[in-house]
Amino acid sequence: MLLLTREWTAGDRTPNTNLRLGQVLAFVAGAANAGAFLAVGQYTSHMTGIVSGMADNLVLGRIALVLSGGLALSCFLVGAMLTAILVNWGQQRNFHSCYALPLVVEALLMLLFGLVGANLGLHTALLVPTTVLLLCFMMGLQNAIITKASRSEVRTTHVTGMVTDLGIELGKLVYLNRRRAAAPNAPGVHANRTRLRTHGSLVGLFLIGGVLGAAGFQQMGYSTTIPLALLLLLLSAGPLWRDLKQHRTVAHG
Image (cartoon, rainbow, N blue to C red; front, side, top):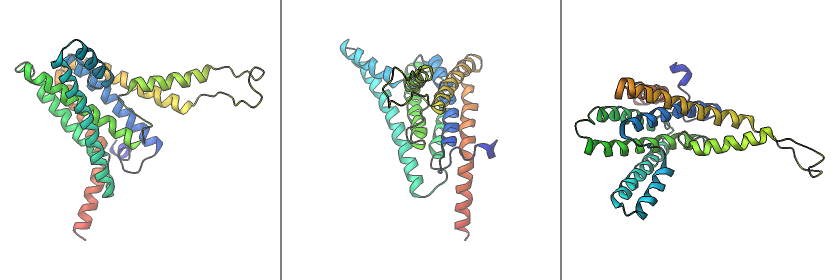
C-alpha cells in the first residue's frame, strides 16, 4: 500500500496523482465534516454558510454569533495560509514531502480532535467552540493542499463548485448537436469526460466519507478519527521517508 501511495503527496505532480490524492482527501473531508456535525452540530467546511450566517446574525443584532462565525472563517483562512507556508518552504528546499507536511499536521490535529471530543461532555461550554475552530482550521489546511498541488484544478471540500462543474459537463453530454440549426462554422458541443469522472468521483467519495464518518461517530464515537489520521499519515510516509534518507546521506557524506 505504501508503495502505491508514496507518490501521491510527492513534490512532483501529475494529473493522476492529483486526482488520487484529491479522492482520498475528499473522503476524509466528508467523514470529518459529517462526524463533526454529529459532535458539535455544525458543518465546518462550509464557509459559504458561515459567511451567510454572519450576515444574517449581523442584521438580527446577534453580535456574539457574528464574532464566532468570524473566528471560524479566520481559522479556515489561517489553515490555508499554513499549507501555503509549509508547501513553499518545502519547495524552496527541494523536499519530496512539501505536500506531505501539511497532511502530517492535519493528521495530528485529527487525533487532537478525537481527544478533545472525548471530553466534550465534561466542559461543553468551552470545548464545543474550540472543536469547531479546530475543525475549520483543518478543513482550510486540507483544501489548500490539493488546491495548491493541482493548481486549483481539484478541491476536496468545495462540493458546490464540483457539482456546478459536473452539471456543466452533463449539460454538454446530453446536448444534441444539430448541424442544420447551427452556424456553418460552429464547433460541436462535447462533454469533457475526464472532468465528468473527476468531479463525479470527488462528490461521490465526499458522500461515502460522510456516510461512513457519521455511522462511525454514532457507533464508535471519537475513536473514528484514528483510522482517518492513520490514512493521512500513510499518504505522507513515502515522501517523508525519502527526505529523511536523503538528509542522512548528506549528513554522513
